[in-house]
Image (tube, rainbow, N blue to C red):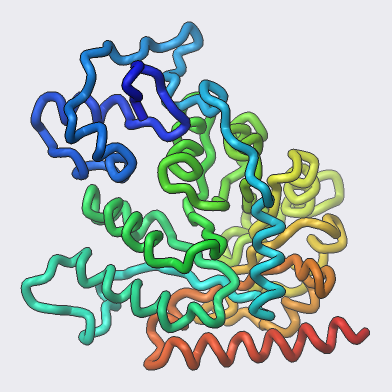
Length: 344
């Protein structure tokens, strides 16, 4: 944010937003989620300071986390995730993927905006699953589909998640330089989520702003739940599947690394666990994609203190007549399996 002295803090108002407000194109609080953090300044008008110049390497200070000190959190995301899983005896991650075409009639109120209806639906899912969810995971694509209103929907949805509950933004970012820095700032600075999903195709320098942000979680795509993913991920390279090499490389990238490993293929999940015995896995696919919960939990399990695997369920909960009952059934099955694994 642009402060009274004209310096940029760790939560900047992006330069294009400043330009839009000054020109009267949008009002404060509209057009970008970052305005939620800047309303007080906006009410008093923006100070007559020139916007910071772009540095010699072409990077804008607003996109560079190193431009301002980033506080180191008391607990790393992985510690918070393990604590949440232990407290609730749950490995359930509830996906918040609001698809307009699947909006239940009960939340379609005449005269209310589409995103208003979707927010009511999201709120219902969060309230119904709060007892059971170790974490929540909104998928960015479903929010971007609604433009500016969708970003506001995302921010309002995040505000309804119980305080302190781990949140993963499913965005699968992967880019380089200032672009990657901008994405990291959006996730960790502007939205303040605890973790994000990432695409490793561009290598570490494409993910560095995420991997180097203190205390955050980075779920790197290794073995996805969609069948066509194996066209690349399953290719043998030097006698070993590519997804195994991705997993091992991600582990070497530092303490923020975790992996996305689909629950639709327990055999491959077991291979990844053997290759990286200490990373957290985000395992999508146990609901409508047909993943086998018990086999996948056994394949990804580390220990009772640090279970090491988080199972995402989205549409199977959102479309359930009673999301609380559906979530409860999943978690009770997880508890039974965890007790059996801990006893061996």
